Amino acid sequence: MKLHKSLLLFGASALMLAACGTNEESSENENTAEEAETEEVADDTVNEAETEENDETDTDTPEQEAGDVIEAEGGTRTVIATNYNIDEEQENGPFTITVKNAQLSQFQPSEDMVDFFGGEDLGMVTLQLEVVNNSEETNLIYPDQGTVVTDTGQQIDAELFLSDDLGGEFYGEVTKTGDVFFFFDGQAEEVSNIRYLINSGTDEDFESFGEDIEFSIDF
Image 1 (cartoon, rainbow, N blue to C red):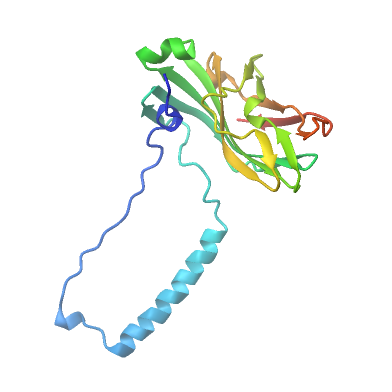
Image 2: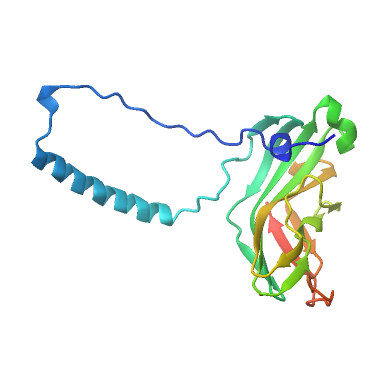
């Protein structure tokens, strides 16, 4: 059975609220051309200030926080802990791998998905990554096949089927971004640190770029 991972794991993660105003026509409130021009200048000044402020804000920060419950096609996920705006980089040959955000959740598959996931109550790690090949040459690396080791003694392979395509051949100066998912037996609330391990990348001749890559992430 093919699953839509965004529906399965996230569902409606954020709700955008827009305020709507009502225009009322009134001759008493009509602005003169001079007043309108003054207001336009003031608005431009405010907009410039807001733009500068927004430029300093990380718009990629996820909306979900600890305690949020997300119901989706494949089950129910409760956010246990988050570590956002990590932005930790590791270099490996021509590759730059960045862990941008991390999240711990507890996941209960729907009744018809229990066999697929192999359990009724699972801990879950989500890592948001950016992978960049800084070379014009084709190179290979597989962050979406990495391993997580928890401080509770769990060793977990990435769920390749559900994760975004972040590995394989990078044809020249290519950037891939997305999420990698890990599921484990146990309670996510017991985890306070994970190690994320990735095998070294290689060139087209499968020559390794050196040491394997390791991130340490706290929750």
